[in-house]
Image 1 (tube, rainbow, N blue to C red):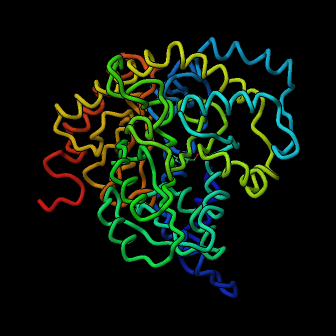
Image 2: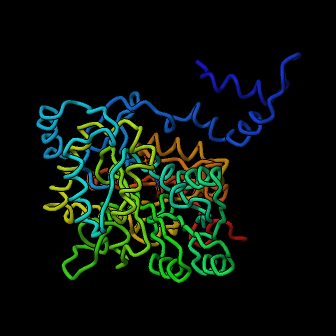
Image 3: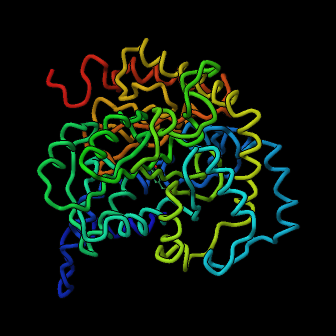
Length: 438
Ligand SMILES: Cc1ncc(COP(=O)(O)O)c(C=O)c1O
């Protein structure tokens, strides 16, 4: 059966039925999103219904697949200690408090914010349901009618927060990805005294962290506040030290600590929905800012709260992180390096220079994404397809994410499939990376 989208797109893009109104704005969007919409409608690895999970294996229809599309980096979604901690919290607090945070917060919130502040080493922290809530409400507040300097490849949710700020009078200027010198030049030429720099920590596509020390130095030199979204770094990378089991560092306390930076003129945003497998997010900021957000950030005033089960899994997750987190990160590091070593041996291109567990692999011809995805699906490998326009055409491919709950057998299956794709000349080679003229 054709899905509603499959029926509508050709109608809208082709001849407009006589007498009906043309809708150019809709046609523009449908054309822009055509590749994505077509894949969504017919590809088994998009908009899929997952029928069953067994460890990090998932079943879609009749096919069992190794899941390399999960952001549960530490594997806490499957951790028995955490699962078993939940019922006691539900008994004590019920399923869902349903007050907005301004109205009242279960004491669990205070416990979470205290432990989080200690883990991050920040002055204070505030938790809200999602990072999207935070970007949409906090970026406009911090920017006011000043100027936002936005990383050109910042996550879409940061962009949306900047757009919301623009609607309220802020100006938005973009600086080149991974280019602190460009930011320096833009800030140097700026006359507006209110400056907010917004960027990612560990990038959700490249898997690399920015040179945070360089960006922080530039921002401070020009009197700007640096706002960093480390959705993918929190829980995975952390402070460095002689006892670290691997170069992810220790404690998973995020990119600021990993870089040896401080929170001076820097606010950090992160989430529990990835490494901690829980619906909750945070902003680490001075108490003065936290107090402002408590009266001025709409999600604190009006939004429904995270479910109690999520608050419980955050608290149980802190316990596990304290006792076993570094061992989980060492396992994550080992599995990730098995994949990266294969990519290297096959001479395949990836943007990943960091060794962190996000490995994006562009394909040789963006028009063959459907075929590449089907081969992976048939071999039992589930990944995130990186489709145009979500990525530029030269970067179309797929993203592999490792978690500590993946097994070596699952990685074997992935590695064999990568070798097969390489054999069939379907992947970009390291010798001819994206955009290279060969
Ligand atoms: C960098 C980054 N920021 C924000 C988000 C959105 O997070 P949330 O689901 O907490 O709104 C994501 C989600 O993938 C992300 O990768």
